[in-house]
Image (cartoon, rainbow, N blue to C red; front, side, top):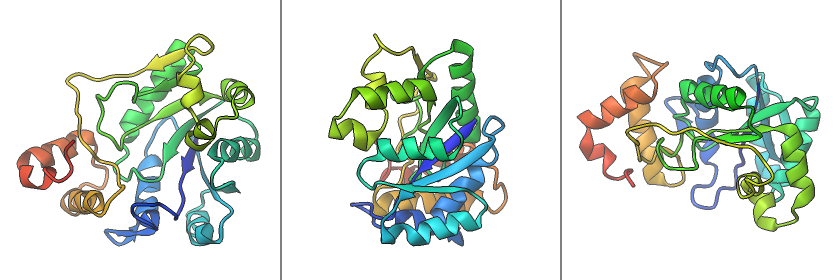
Length: 233
């Protein structure tokens, strides 16, 4: 399945975060490294903006061999429409965001498997908070996404891409993946404190186990509760 990775340089709280060095490589590169371990993703495409500030991001990701589609900075829904057209309009796609360098390929695969088994239009692991924030996965059927795009002109929907789908269960078949016990941690990167946490995780785990997963991070947190406090929600 195609993964569309949404990213930009103009983050409000931490500008340029996707290109910040994380153990010697830009953060977005570390995330792509992890996404490539998924067994159910066969393609990754970066969806970024046409703004000059995103030139460096587009060039770097293209240099990794990842195709890049560039579209509107603010109308991200339209950017995804363009990305899907550029990718040959696949039957479905996975939406991921570029502020999640701890993304777990096993979690991605589990959400895709749940989506396909239930023949859903839209599936996520975010409807209820049981996975750490930063392991967010959304799987969408392209025809359902096209219907959503045609149905809404809300700026909120067009900025956040998928709300129209999950806000209308009467129109779309909605799947939800949850885990028990819930793991309500903050592993996304929006602030300097978030980046410091992610850096600590990478420094501890990546040198000896570059393929580390959610369970490894949870074990590291349990051994280092002082580092978790700044990042727990």
